[in-house]
Length: 378
Image (cartoon, rainbow, N blue to C red; front, side):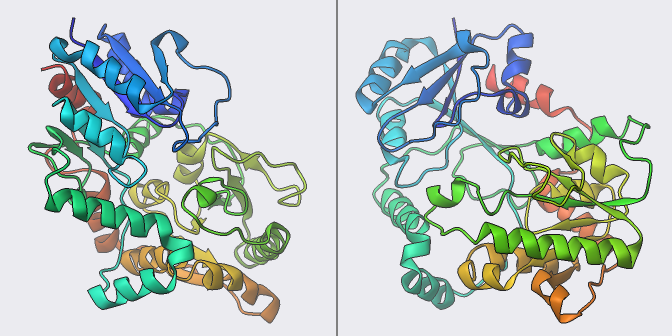
């Protein structure tokens, strides 16, 4: 019987199962497996309990992976790869190519990136090899593979928005970013989580997120960072007459003291933004909820962020703010008696963001689940 096989270097959890339609395929009685790659290259160990264990296959090396694929070769299976091609995933894509697997990919979650000239980008890579070594190696791997046809293109790429054009696919199918689907669901909920006026800070767990280590970036000083954040939050609360509520990143685990007793909520980002006055962020795809709900945005950074991440995260913050016509504020300016300004919503820019990154005219009124199910089981 034909199967849909997911391949990823991170363990299956409830969030992935929902957002990538794994649970939906099970509901539709499709045979699915989740191949979890664990080896010396992929070293993620973020498994807080096992989810749908009966569908998970743990694979420890390339040899075992290829043996599994060879056994499945005559079953016309569909392989959904939850990995971009790069130097760490190159052997995976070589194995899939050698065995001529039918490959699917979901390209979503892109963010605004200002076009920088080639000289500027190359200079940045060379001067910041320590911080950008993974990106540098990924670029070389992809260019080399393309030049010598080492990797087959995806048979089908599902794309969310016009910006999703990076993955090499023979066929492209418009789909909605999962935040767009969540936004539609949440819009049917009338009850507010918080009755009083508030704004939302979109936490990205910046001081502790292990993905920073994964991509070769340094960490900022957590004490200095959270101290500056709290001083800024106090200023915002006084200046705008709202309370600041923290929408915690899924990887974060905070005690009550870190945000000086402010409300910190997990798994409620979409609902919080829906009823908020405005939204504060560094950079995050969850900004999509602010865009769809037409909420004013303010992008923040610190002296340390601008210094340590000048060619990465700080660039992303600048690009988001410019793309959406939103304000930027250095939270270290709080101690310099500089007030933050929250720009009003630029309707044209917000609408452009919607169709560049979240949905399309073809898919906005169609269930992503049905689009995905129809194509991957055909």
